[in-house]
Image (cartoon, rainbow over all chains, first blue to last red; front, top):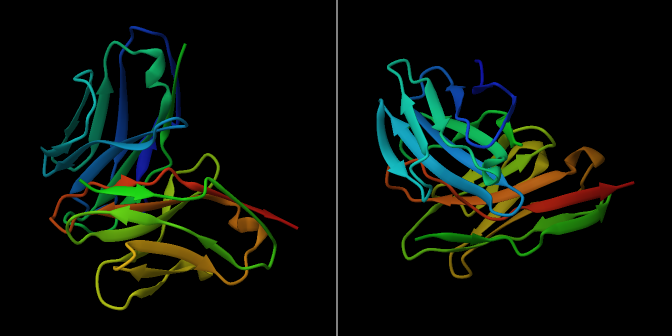
Length: 112
Length: 114
């Protein structure tokens, strides 16, 4: 069974640009969550989608948004990029409920 | 709200020695508990989970953890570590409410030397 796939693996952008990250969950998983990982703040929850609906949202500004498609694939968008947005962005999928989440290898975003 | 404290940011240990990585959590309600491992340039891999039942949980790669409700702890142990266990380990909690939101500790870097 294929794992969680995130694309691209690496991305370099400049301040003020916007970026879209993609996540394909494990087949059959309907929940997709996004996390931001930085050396200073650690792992922080961004948002969770289940059956195309955002169920939960972390404490991030509105520049961070996401969506989920009918095939459960999810995208995350960050607009007006800031230097502090440099991070590893991790996607995780699960069947829903409080079952264990399975993580992708992440997209490393660097802002110049 | 829940919180997780990993008491050690780094744990150095020699190969074949035992190790314990400490995790304490705070929550006013029951939680589910997890340990994840992250190797360099990779995502998180689930080591083990505690949902209910036996307080001693066995995971992959020879790791185990013990849930202690009175001490609100979920320490991770391995009787004999290998060089390949060098990685960062994260303890996490979630509510049994049906929402997939994990709250993570800051992580413990396990450094295994020969």
